[in-house]
Length: 252
Image (cartoon, rainbow, N blue to C red; front, side, top):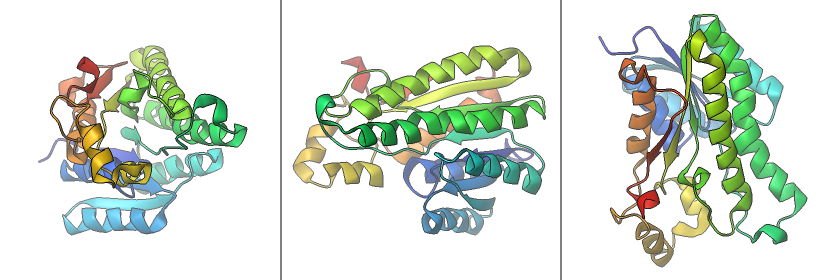
């Protein structure tokens, strides 16, 4: 038997990158997984990969800026599998790379709506479903940029700082009811999102790698492992934590 044989997990932003790796890691440990993303093709591919490996998963197309869509995602998890035990709120976007005063109002609101409000919308529906089964675990995907500043990324940095505050507050509110809430703060990880930010250029990539004492980018499986551990019995005394997995970036 694997550790999550009776559990159900929802992973948002699971069409690629960290979200896909996390969905696959949950499934490998026996969980039934609800994969969600705005990218239906990528989400269905994640489900196919899980099924090919012997796991169980379904895909639900979900835009985390739409509260009704998020409610439908959680409702589908419960109606399909009977419960919700784990949620990894991973959906996010990078946003424009501009100085703070050069951002448009729409650019600011778009990044914050996906990266912060989307996490809150998800928790708003996940927590009641978990309370129905006497508890569960939520892991919010933050970033090292939720702990430090970074030039030309104000909405992303602000949103990720907000995710940490939201995580700690909810952890306090629901601890006695059996819902643990934590966050993972990755360093720069080799994902399609990072490529969209310009790191397909070898010189730019090397510059980012050198910011980490280990002198490389993170791997998606390294972040997924942290998420799964936070959901395990081994982390049963861990809530309100912002777990940094960054190759030493924030230790400088």
